[in-house]
Length: 281
Image 1 (cartoon, helix red, strand yellow):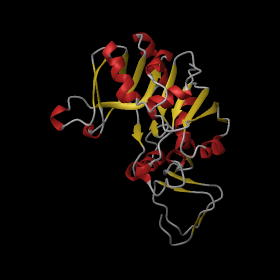
Image 2 (cartoon, one colour; image 1 turned 60 degrees about the vertical axis):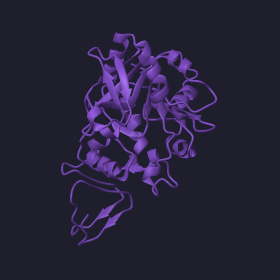
Image 3 (tube, one colour; image 1 turned 30 degrees about the horizontal axis):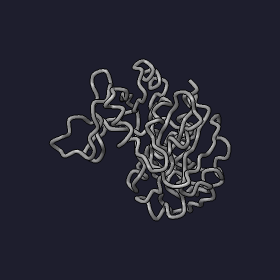
Image 4 (cartoon, one colour; image 1 turned 135 degrees about the vertical axis):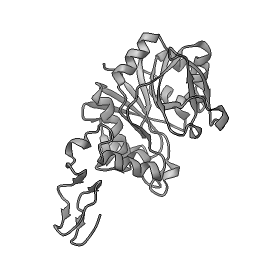
């Protein structure tokens, strides 16, 4: 499988201020690498070779960190002249694509089987397929109602408790056909979730599937901290997990940890850090 991927990284991460005053949210460190690196690794794990990064806010930070590629994933950059919304950003970045492609948010962590997602997409003849995930508190999100065959019946934004009849939400990863871009008008911001997908639902050409596995939207201080714990505790598959100690600790080679210091897992000790005797981390 070698579908290209459009990676959306346009948000300013306002809920994570002041951490994001000078640093993009997706470039914040998550254990030993930027948050965005986990998205690149997930794509590469399933054979994706071409990534188009759609960004507007502080775009130079991404280019400086990743350049023309990350591992087996080659990268190019589509710099938005102004905020275009999710649909507008996809249309802007994918304008040269002529076949099926992934589009996904770059600030979420996930381990869904992309091969299975593409197989399902092709089996239904969908124009768009949405990766879905169940959540414990659906009231915080927009719900996606699907039929038995996966066809999306309706969307419900910020539901009242009495209206909740599913726990499935949009996980921010899609397989799209190029003709979907015809529904994205130029010259203004467009939301793919609120404008494009509902139109496809009217035609019965958008499907959704929940594939299980880990998912986390990293957008608040609480979820950012949880992401660190989950990486260090191997709650989902990451390249970091290969380097972790059996006690869920990761110590950079340039760090110094005195024998009299105490590390309480899960913990990461970064480059140049010095943990002296008597300290507890």
